[in-house]
Length: 491
Image (cartoon, rainbow, N blue to C red):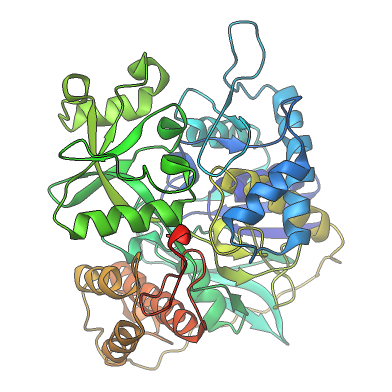
């Protein structure tokens, strides 16, 4: 029987496990618990052309426009054609997407979509509802919780396993498999303001890079326009579905910030984020005006609960304080359409991976769909692998490294300054010179604390982002370089 090791409890990894659990010996390794992932935090929904008035061709066109046509068209076609079939199967299995009073699926609208095609579950708690439902289908997998992946093992050019450290006991274990799957999410905690779960520290991207796997599109980090921000700190995402329902972006004087921009408040995320940051730099405060949305608390229970928990008087003011922050990595470990990386038997699914589907700027609510599609294609490919009878364990090196010098806060502040919504070529050079003083490319993880290792991983990811941005000849999508001349309508 094939042995499959999945690193990460995100939707993509768990959905992959549902496809393999009856035919393979599947182990899921997660840094904390099954509930700790970005998938659990996703609010907006999942996009699919299931409405009779919509088509995959139109979904494809919207995805390409949002991605600045940097997308790989074959990947986009795979997403928009395979996705609806997988969602129908989930519905048939009992997945409770929200419906209208007449029982029909209730499709929402989000930024840069030409149709109402966003499915929600439990209002604005789609990610938690969908991920929990998929996890409820897992009955024949082995869970390894509180376990951080440190290093991939490579034998004769083939990825055969991963070295894992139990975060409670410190014990090291090598898990071997016929297929090793990265499902670790992105790198949002590189930045001080982020929607990402605290466990998301670029581990999968860094491990793959150290093992020699190819990375791609690392310049493209998406900054979501609307994070709940109080006193300079982020307290969660304010879903784009709220703007899709009629909310608008305003300043303290109730001036409509996006009034003169094509598609206005529902422009692509990179465009909205840049306009908001420019407005903020002029000394303005940023708000989401929800006065046009009836029954807000019923329609957005998750956001309402979060606002109440932080004592935001939104029901009186009809305004939510926001600003842009790190959300989603479009780049990552390069894969083909079957989620195979450049290292044989190493796969990557979900946000850690990049098969080109998102281009230079991800279309809203395509991420959960990509989790399902990339996992399904990976499962099909993994089933063609010939099982291995025996594996050899490879010990971690014992050579010492210099003490790691940076702190997470310092790294995040530097990343926000130089790798944030707007970049400059001078700033990129300055950031890379700052990074040079630290020993992060090939640390010995057993000699670092979990926090130090997370910093090392994020430093490596930051280097890849900066160098990719530096190599770009001009601004494109989420990689906006201020010295470049960019048409006004592009942001």
